[in-house]
Picture 1 (cartoon, rainbow, N blue to C red):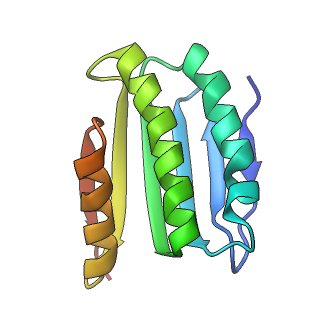
Picture 2 (cartoon, helix red, strand yellow):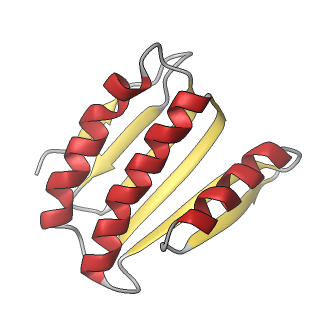
Length: 128
């Protein structure tokens, strides 16, 4: 399965999804013109990945800001990961949610996603 790499811009995050290593990274700002179009290849990649997922999938999310339409798409991404989690059992998927030390909003956003999903989240505070 091909690695999915999307180069970030001032409005879109950098996304790196490696099926072989099971490491998925989303970093930066997510305020694309059309969130659904931007996240479509990510969701489609995860559909394929779910069928042949690595034994352990590590998801690193380090967003400095995302808009409302992105939050829905990010939830869709997490729901696809939930399928991987269900197929691979307890150790199958871990989401590392990074947030800046003084960014209460980003911490709360991670906690909100955690409360909706059945995937283990690790809240990781970044030192400034």
